[in-house]
Image (cartoon, rainbow, N blue to C red):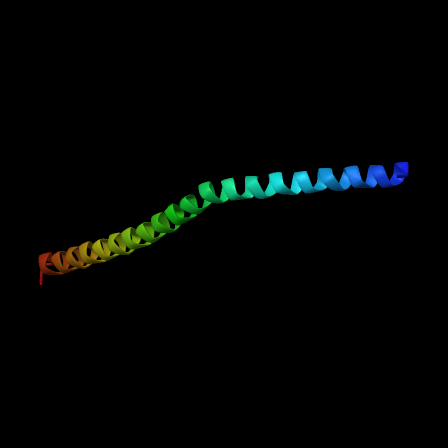
Length: 75
């Protein structure tokens, strides 16, 4: 076998080995990343719900204050 063919075969084997390592690494990362993505989505949802509730409470307090101020006016 020529030196070029041997070199090409060696490089191909190294490439296959590297590809297998990358597949293993990707699978490992997916096991870590997926739960983090799910947690992030849940936190975002919780945050949106909290913000809606805070806005609702703020509006209620604002209306109560406005009503009190109106009732306290000297008519």
